[in-house]
Amino acid sequence: MSRSLEIPQTPSAGITDLAGGANQVRVRAYNERLVLSLVRRHNALSKAEIARRSGLSAQTVSVIMRSLEKDGLLIRGEVLRGRVGQPSTPMRLNPDSVYSFGVKIGRRSVDLVLMDFVGQIRMQLRNTYPYPMPEWILPFVTEGIAEMEARLGQKQRDKIAGVGIAAPFELWSWAKEVGAPEGEMDVWRDIDLRQEVADAIDYPVFLQNDATSACGAEMVFGNGQAYPDFLYVFIGSFIGGGVVLNSALFSGRTGSAGSIGPLPVQGQDGKTVQLLKIASIFVLEDLLRARGIDPKPLWFSTDEWIDFGEPLEIWVRNTGAALAQAVIAAASIIDFSTVIIDGGFPGWVRSRIVQATRSALTSHDLQGVAVPDIIEGAVGSQARAIGGASLPLFSRYLLDQNVLFKETSA
Image 1 (spheres, rainbow, N blue to C red):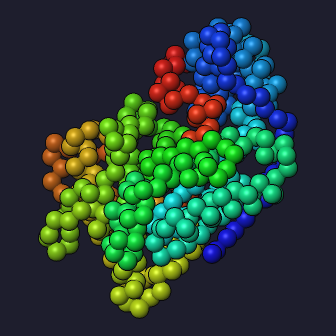
Image 2 (image 1 turned 135 degrees about the vertical axis):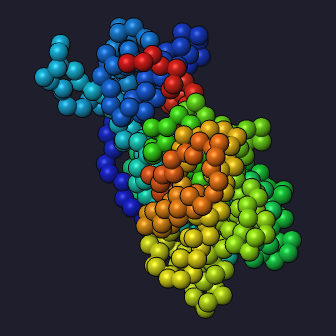
Image 3 (image 1 turned 30 degrees about the vertical axis):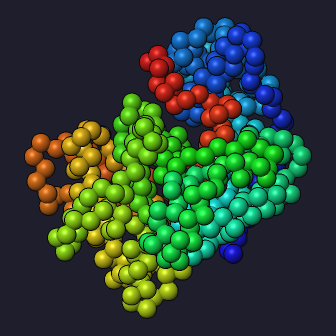
């Protein structure tokens, strides 16, 4: 097992629970969540700006912000002077006020992170395996949480909001592709992953599809903040994605909206195959193995790949060609303004894939297609774990993303 551990900064004072029972308390909690959500979206806001954007009265906003500042959730920025009217003081989220654990379960590795209130990873652990099995993953998660807790003081542990798990649905479905012995991964059919973790720890536990979680992380912490509608693509062991419409994550009837892996595309040989059979890291793994190159570096440290030369070039080119077809198909149904591409690899690989996709688009007949911008994601290889860690924060402190965009224009 390969592990790396980062020590968190010393946190500030504790927080209080925002939940309430009576109607008046629930309304107050709702308004507090609205204020926190607006501050998160805009990084820092003054009381006057929050009042304009939320539609709440200046007095209500003032009361709420005093309360949130007292609880340590908001901290003051530098006073802004030189503008018309009285100087204003922007308020921003206190990174040290809340922590959460995020778990990413992949086909080749599992990651555990401790994240702060603004999306920064404070500690992280990773374990690699040939294919995912419960006996390798569940002890790693529970023991890893205990290891991280041991590095925290009691006040820090009291600020942990919960655990969010980002995992592929139906893990057993990809046994053949990951090289698992026939029938061995069927054990996942009878396992309630969320409940298994919840039974072993003392925190609330949440579960979401891994690609959907990564999309949520990009929307909240990355370049997705600037786009009301976009298709998100995350290239991991297998390719997946998510859909954002009207600045809200759209998960669909089964929670798998935007999971573009099964999308039919034409390969270099002219045959139609699923997108995941071309634009997934396991395909690169096979290319490397066929040339006698050890593929293990793909999984040990996703941000420190070496340049594998020709096999990597082939994979990037084929991935870009397949993604171009997927972009056209998606844009033909929903006129996305943007497609955001990220994955479990270094930024320089992401840049090459984005460029290959843009180049491949020019070879297609685009008449009648409003081609979206193709841009890089900003969250990076830990997007799935960060998205998982975001789940407890939204459950306890923030509003559903839809609410963020019902604000009054400033």
